Structures are given as structure tokens and as C-alpha cells.
Amino acid sequence: MSKKPTSAENPDPQDRLAKALEAAGHGAWLWNLDDGSAWYSSTFRKILGLSHEQFPDRFESFASHVHPEDLSRVHHAVATHLDGKSEFDLEFKMRTNEARWRWVRVRGRTVIEDGQSSVMMGTLTEWPLSAGRDRLAASASDQLAAALHDQSKSSRELEKAKADLQNQNEDLQRAREKAEAAATSMSLFLANMSHEIRTPMTAILGFAEVLSEEQANPADQSFAVGAIRRSSEDLLTIINDILDLSKIEAGGMGVEIVPCAPLNIIQDVVAFMQAQAIASGLELFMELKAPVPEIIETDPTRLRQILINLIGNAIKFTEHGGVKVVVDLNKEKLEPRIDQDSSDAPPADIRLRIQVMDTGIGINDAQRNRLFQRFTQADPSTTRRFGGTGLGLTISRHFSRMLGGNITSTSEVGLGSVFTVEIGIGNAGPHEMVSILPPYPHEKVNLKLKNGAASNNPKQSKKEITVLVAEDGEDNQRLIVHHLSRAGMKVIVANNGLEAVDLAVAAQKQSSAPDVILMDMQMPIMDGYEATLKLRELGWRGAIVAITAHAMTGDRERCTQAGCDDYLTKPINSKALIQTVQKFAQIAADKAL
Image (cartoon, rainbow, N blue to C red; front, side):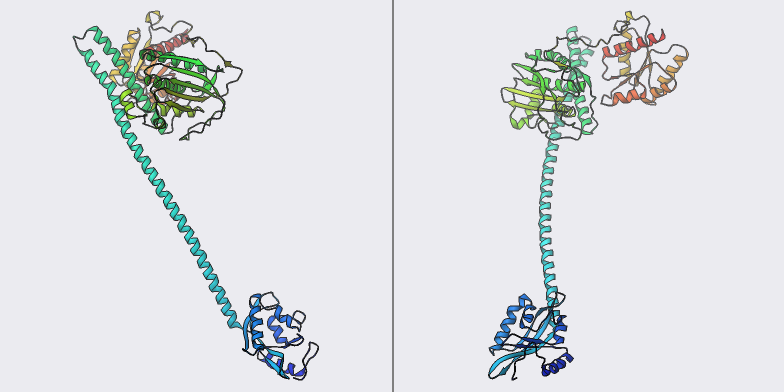
């Protein structure tokens, strides 16, 4: 070539060459190596989807559309070719009008004029093989990345599964250890319980045999009666603890919140426990440390039960010195509870605090941490030395939490212990505060009726009282008849609920209806609940008093719902029995006036 083409020129040979290449699907190009001008055929631009304005006839147009990753490789290939070291035949990516990258194959060679390389020309072809290879590589890369991601995910899932399995194994191990500890505690408890039940039973049976001896002197008989009474009370305490714990475990234990005078309750319990303290040679007294409400809202029965347990333990484990009961209020936030239960009430903001302090044997921290566990005492030797079921503190703490408080303890071996019970005060007003202990004995509710019928002396009754006793147990029949007959009452006995209904209805028709019906609630043929309902359906308006061995929370409500006027529990207390019968007999007499 004698003349270098410029962008303004349109040489015919190039057009003919371009048309020939276009027929073969190739784009043509020509670069002037001296001034950087260039020429690109219409097919060249068509392959890239670009117009003349988008891709002007300059070398920079070509370079600016090469993929950045390929640009250095293209420059190197051109330079190597110009040095005569290699052919210019290269595959790379170029940008299209859609801002996408298209694989192309560019081939070219230099034209020598006057011994110099002044022009480089060649072709551009869309290169589907490279594109396919790129897609294949991209697909393989994507698959590899996905596989690596899946492997990484699987590895993480495997690690998580491994960690979960390890946690499950640890949980199972802890559960196993806990179950084994519970089984051990249960075994120890059952062995201890067997001892605790057999001990009073031995005394009861043994002294009953003494009473059956014809030659027994009065002193021995009197001692035997006292021993039987004491052992029976101990046995009843054990049974009540077991029943309470059973109710707690079943989630059926409740509390009855009513207004009550806390200082009176505490004074009553202290007075009740004085005999036990004196018998142990101990001093037992009460101290009001700070003003407390005169009236609070709580369950007085559960509060008494808690205090009797705590003060009884303090006396039992104290050999010298004494026991002090300190009372005040606590407005500080309650410490977090350990081993919370779903039946626990929320901690009350203001709580009555009662501290039972003793100068007893004390216990170390390890033993103290086991005190509130079910079936557990501080040390097995404690059971052998002092007795007890190991249930009292567990039950007491449960009650205290149901009342919005808790029970905590501190102790020092050889110096004594402090057990602190706190209970919520309900809606007690701050203006009703008591700063000194009221005189004791305090005024109590007079249970005697104003019309003068509440007396154990039958001679004071204006009319003979008739009582219908529905009881299927022969021994209990004889016992109840004995107490009522000694009180001057007439007694009619029914062996089951059906007989009681028939006897009551027949007597009513003869205008000699009994004044009071004592109804055992568990009997054959027809039980006391059904018999009471039947009598009320028949229009019986007289008093019906339930007598039952069911002494759990909720049993009283069941009896009253059936139609009973009052509720007495077995074992039968003779004084309570006679007073209850006289009370309802007097009510019946007043209605008849």
C-alpha cells in the first residue's frame, strides 16, 4: 500500500474486502499504526451490536471495548506480533451494546511498506466455542461454588448436630444423675417413713395391750392412755405431711386468702409450742422488731402450719439456750427463688417477715442447701437422732411461695440457725400498724352462742338432743355414740347413706326428726354426698354435718356444695364433735321458737 488510510477515506479495495468477509460472517478491521486511525466494517459493528457513533473509527474504540481481564493479554499479543515473534490470533471478550460480554476471535497480520509495519488488518468473528467454554466454565464454577457452599453448610450442620448431640448427652447424663439421686432420696425417704410410722404404731399397739391387761394398775393405765394419744398425734402429723406433699406434687394444693391478724396467729403458735419448749428446757419468746399491719390478707391456716413447722424444728434441734421469733416488715425486693414452681405466686412488694432464731446445733452450707429438697434432711444421722420425715420444710416453703414470699435460712455449726419466712400482706393499709405486741391471751372470737346452749354439760340443755349418725365403720360408730351419749344425747345409727335417708324421712313424718345428722361421706350402697343431696331434694332443712377422713384442701368445699352445713375431720376430736352438735341443735331450737 502506497498511502495510509485515514478515518475520512473510503478506499474501494477495503469495501470489496469487507463485502467478501461479510459473506463469510466475518467483520473486517484495519488499524493505521502511525496515527491511530482505524476502519471497521459494518459486520464488525453488527457482531457487537454497535453503531458507528458508538464505535467510531479509532483504535481506542477497540481497546475500550475489550474486557478488563483480557486487555493486557490483547496488548501483549499485538506487541508480540509486531515484533515478529508470533501470529496474532486471540480469543477474548468484548462489550456489546447491551453492556454484556461476547466472546470473539480476532485474527490479523501486519502489512509491510518500505520495510516498515505501518498497517495491521484482520478479521473479527463471533466465537461460540469460546462462549460455550465460558458458559461451561461458569457453570462448572457455579457448580463448584454451590458444592463448596453445600459442603460448608453440611459441615456447619454437622457441627451443629454434633453440638446438639453432645448437649443431649449432657442433658441425659444430668437427667440420669438427677433420677438416680431422686431414687436414692426416695429409697431413704421410704425407709425413714417406715421407721416414722412404725415407731408410733408400736407405742399405740403396745400400750393398747397394756390397757387390756386385767392386773394393770391405774398409774400404768394413765401413762398408757397418754402414750397412745401422743403417738396417735405423731402418726397423724406424718399422714398429714404425706397428704400435703401428694397434693403439692399433683398441683392441687391451694390457699385461701382472707383477712386475719398476723400477730395473734404468731402469738397463738408460740403459746401452743411453749409446752414443747419447756419440756426441752428451752426459752421460747416473741419480739416485734418493727411496726406491722394489724390486719393482713393471707391464708391463716397455712401460716400456722409454716410457723409450727419452723418453731418445732428449732426446738427439736436446740439442746441449750432458746428460740426467738422476730417479726417485722420487709419492703426490699425478694431474692430470686430457686427451683420455682408453676403454682408460686408472684413475689409481693411488701411482705411480713418472721425470723425463727435458735441456738441449736447448726448446719454447714452443703447440708443447708439440701434442706428444702423433697424427702431430704440435712444428714441421715439427723433422722436417726431427732426423727422426722424431711417433708416439713419442703411443704412450708411451697406454702410461703404460694403466699407471695419465700423461706430462706442461714446457719453456723455449733451456734445455731435462722429460718426466715416471708409472706405477702395483701391490701393491708399502712395506717393500721401495730408497734407493740398486743397482750396475750388476746381477745378471741367467742364461739358460744348468746342464747346459752354452747356447753359440754348436757344438764344445761333445755331439750334432749337427738343425733342421727351415718357411719359404716363399727369402731367409729361405737366411738361417736360413746362421746354423744356421755354428753346426754340420744343417738340413732345408720350403716350407710341409704339407711340414713330412710331413717331421717321416717322420723320427720313422725314429727321426731333428729336435730343434727352426722354424715360420714364415704360409705357403701350410698355415700354421704349422695345421701345429703337426696335429703336436700326431699326438703330436709335440718343440720347435716360431714364427718370424713378426707382432709385435703377442697374437700370442705365439696361437702358444702353437696349440702352439708359444717365439716369435721377424722380422727374425731370429742370436744369439737360435741360443740358442733350442740351449736346446730341450738340453731334448730331457735328456729322452732
